[in-house]
Image 1 (cartoon, helix red, strand yellow):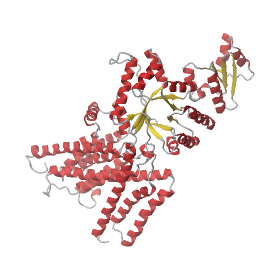
Image 2 (cartoon, helix red, strand yellow):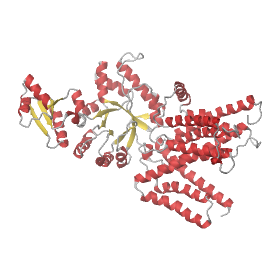
Image 3 (cartoon, one colour):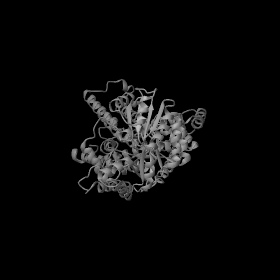
Image 4 (cartoon, helix red, strand yellow):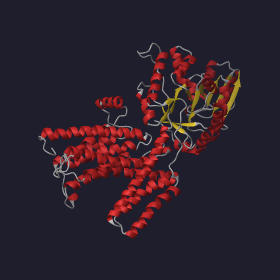
Length: 636
């Protein structure tokens, strides 16, 4: 194939790949934009406690808070430990009950029968209660879990259950949702949201829980951790009943993905944090992280701005809801993201076209090019249709990781490979800004590809994620550093020569420190505390710009790239380290888009703001060097 024709084919393939990626990302953006309603729920137990602390009836507090936007009350499953803590039952070891009966000689005929029973066991746990309905519920649940190990006695409004287990083994056992609480929630004009807490339930217990859903009819269920063998069944049953699955943002239980997939991703992300007054967090949760249900916790103390606890919580909830509405969201029944999965043919093309492009660019013989071109198209198609879901996800994540590491490095090389302070082609400032624009364009193209490749329901809900952010950073920075060192020394075998002077070793150590800080700051947690000045800067940018750009982009990477593109350090020993520092901005730029649960337009706005600020700072530094340091001579 003629060289000019081959280049046209490569260009056409790149355009086609980007067009398919843009089409896919647009579909994903439309899916996210269609889900603009957020549910607001309160904890039922907390509502009762705060109402008591405020000295008002729970009905009054519920009515006031409903006016502020709350429509749901979260009912958490009763556990034996919770029932004991709230005084609804008393738990005794067999030895404790025997001692109590011997010392106090209780008049209860039921307790006397328990102590006189021939099977009385000092190692068993005895549950004593006075509620007949609760007794029947506990008896049913315990008998399902511990068949043959449960005894029951009743009489004189006293009920006793004996379980041949220690109390430590029983405390976490869930016994379902209190039906009286469900009735109370409906009576207050709210809808119930249920939360299961016990991870050790048997199949029979889960069947009972699912039957209770038909009576309770919750809008949302937080299933908690489930046994592996029950996860698909629970998801299927929730999907058939039209009940949304709640996915806690910061504590996703094991098996949540299996449950969601079985319900065809009828699920929403849930934001629940300890009580706080950083109301902007609610805006960021729904706008930037696809959260569609929030659980604000109530205040227990009266702040200086409110006359009483009732008014304080009305203000608190009102501000939380106002923050949600500030993002353009309505408050009401949560709308899940569309349950779409990536079209298999489209996925195969997204995987195959880059391979086909590499084949065309590889300089193969004509016959070999045809063979490898067919393989490049057919192999991804076979993988998409033949691989199980798990390995196919890994394949997509692996392809995304390669693009995430190589894409920003390639962007840097393409932007800087022709920079020369003596060529007389561009003013330094224009050259620097051009280099930033060219590199960012290539990086954004790579980001678009990753967004398309990983743009379906499981990634939008963060049940799956881009894997290897730190690995991608490492690939980018290593490739750019090696290329920069090679550019500095045009001789063959440059990697064998001693290139590290003492000053260079210091520079390399400094670069290593920057990379270490970057790695620690690239995840959700960091061993390095964020300095106070940066927190204040973040808050200022969030208030002024609404969407905060990343500091490592506009304060570090992008200005460094403008300087490198302007020719700073050309021919100097330290230029490779400046160029590698500049690569931090491109790596971070791509990293912005690999958070698939963040809407694409939010990531794009954050990136463009970072580019504008970074270009401005880099331009000021370039002009300062050009006019102040060397009196206007080129490439100061």
